[in-house]
Image (cartoon, rainbow, N blue to C red; front, side):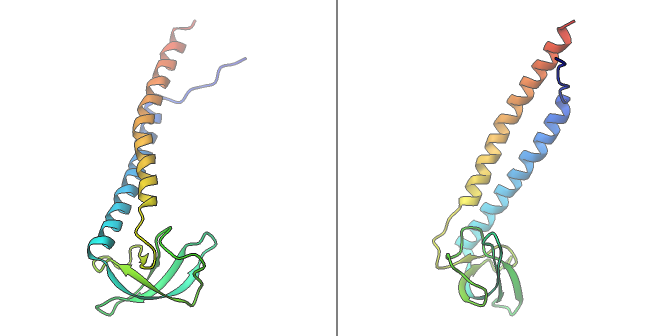
Length: 145
């Protein structure tokens, strides 16, 4: 039976750094948005324009300074059964109103941020360990005649 070709360690590590970096950025962005909504969020009414197939709710609202904004309600931040055409109370960040908003009837949650944090930590620990194992296997195969 022929042995499989292994990827180069440098390629594995490079892809790992990119993936961990992407999850790290997602985690940072999600925590930043959640914190902004908690600290300086402004409540207003929004019109639901669409409920996507995966439950993502799109809303349109007008900010305190008169701008019309269309954005998404964060995952897990909306009441079940929300339908297009409804008016819902939301909380938005006045400095970044186009970021995800939260339905103010739903308690604050950070589920997406915690899941992405767990993926970041798992990758930050797992990628170096897997790269070390890959490098050992490369050395082992180099010693076999």
